Image (tube, rainbow, N blue to C red):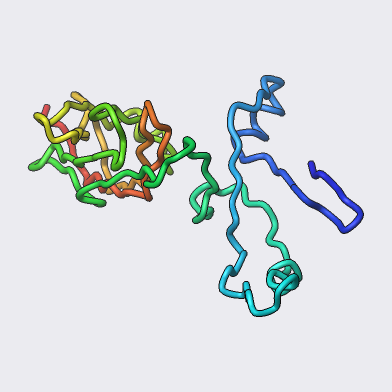
Length: 194
C-alpha cells in the first residue's frame, strides 16, 4: 500500500510476516504500525544554502519499508507536549545463560525517564517461539524503591532439551510500550533426571 503524490511515493506500507499470516487466515486487523527515518542523513542539511538547505536530503534515494522490526533503528515516536527526555529501557545484562547447573538468570530492567514507578514487561520478537514456550518460564518482581524490575528466566519444570538453543528477544513495557534492544538467552542442553 502507498500514498502517492505527483512526485512519487510519500508513504509506502508493507505487512510483516505475522501480518501476512493473519491476512491469509482471514483475521487481519491492523493494531500497530511504525514510522522510521532510517536512510535519512541529516548531516546533509546545510543551512548556508537558505531555502535549499534540505535539497541534498530531499534528493536522496528512499529506502524500501522493512518487515523486520529488528532492522529498524530509528523509530519515530510521539511524545507528550513539553517532554524533554526520551523514555527508553535500560537492561542489565543484555545476555545470559541457563543450564542444568544454573537453571535461572535475571535481567534487571528499568524504564528510564518514566513517571510513576516501575512497570512490568512482555517478552516479544522471540526468534524460536515454539521452543521458548515449551521450555522457558518468565517471572517478574519489583526491586525495592529502585524503579527496577527483575525479569527472571528459568527452565519450566519437566522441560527437556537435548541441544543448546540461543534465543533472541526483546522486552516491551506494558505501560509505555517502549521496546528494548535485542537481548540474548542461551539455554544449554538440559535433561531432567529420571
